[in-house]
Image (cartoon, rainbow, N blue to C red; front, side, top):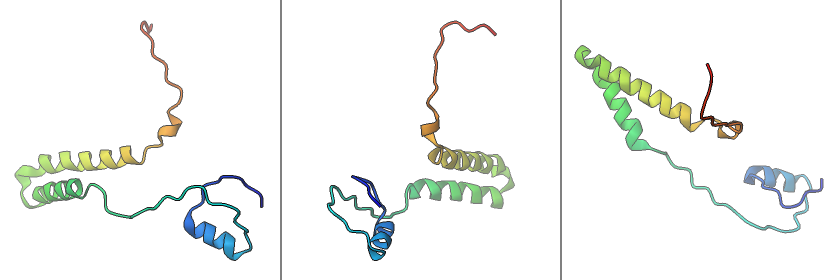
Length: 94
């Protein structure tokens, strides 16, 4: 295998080294610290949805938070790199 300046995930790099990869140089390292994101938001959505389960009058409130939570999750995992062909027009005939 021959490559120059590639980005490798640590477990994959370790596997390559264990299988005979000879590493010539390391240019940059990126340290990743896993942590939960937006915990306050998740707790708020969960609490609001729970209120709808316990009190029928707050059912619409719970449904709104359900949609809010689901749409936020969908936007976070949206593949923005696929959004490349954008055109703006002033006059568009229908």
